[in-house]
Length: 185
Image (cartoon, rainbow, N blue to C red):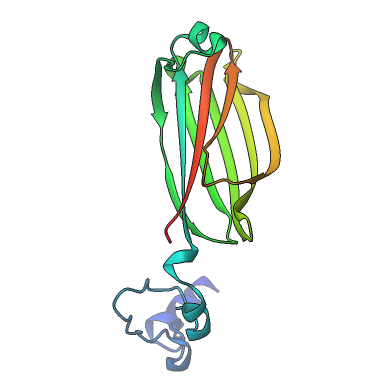
């Protein structure tokens, strides 16, 4: 059977190429659009404006002097570990997933923030969900032991006028996460 199959292929009796009708035709991509993604409809483009654009900045810091944080000092010495900026539209969730490693990779801190900005009569508010998990490599097998340090779901009003800060500890290290939301319009 193997020899018969090889003969059919060699004599071109069997063609493995798809017919012309199912082949993908090249598509011209208009300037400013991403290939492979559908362009928004004219109605959606008309409804969106720069006033609907929102920028979310999440700054993760390691607090170097925990005592200054406890006493409420105005300036707390800290080191910026990550500062991702995500752009979204009003009503569309923005997701920030950040992973920071310590102790030569033995400790991972995973910060997951999902923030959905909403427009209202009193200004902008945000629905947010935050989860902070640490993973520590343990034992000879190198498996990770996972611990939940912070989990919060809230609706924040007046989100543009003031930032939001969480302070949390992981293995006796103190961290802060500052979230700022700015509207483009």
